[in-house]
Image (cartoon, rainbow, N blue to C red; front, top):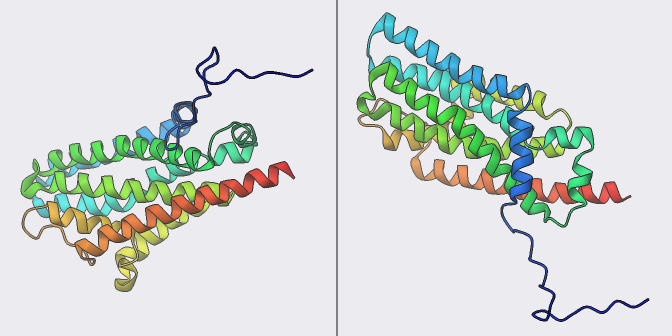
Length: 259
């Protein structure tokens, strides 16, 4: 039996092309995976801890610019931001791969790059909501935005969120142990090594973000071992390269599923 297809414009509308950069259905499923499970509890607890610590520090020591810088760098940018990035980045795709649900998504006529870009947008959005906003509030609690510290660390946290989300999204694609690897990276490298070893600081997302925060802050209260231009370029390169590689790796997952 033959099937006749009407030409476009004569009774049958041509199929609409799938989105290239953002797919609403993929985004909705990803938001549900991130905010509808136990991850949501961690996402709420970590920023709450920052606010509690900030309130306690303010009550004990009063408004002090140096103390605010210590808390926002030592806890917010060094621990909160990368940890939330681990939860959001790996959680955006890791569980789907582990449970095999990614096969059904790959069977849909959606570009693999679109899937990755959509999940990156969701991961960044969730990370911003649970880091940048609490960091801004914590900065105002600590010293009422003295020397523009609250705004500076908010901007720094925002740019770090983008890079961390891309890095941990890639980990979610390439390994089943993405959470463990991400936690080791966040706590050991970003939280410890990058704060102690001078040479390692230049290879830290935290320092790249601090370069941006330093530009926004007034005075010399915020400092970074990396220049502004180098920090911005490195943040952009890491984000683009990890996102590209994640999309490329996702294509190989499709081939493995077909085999």
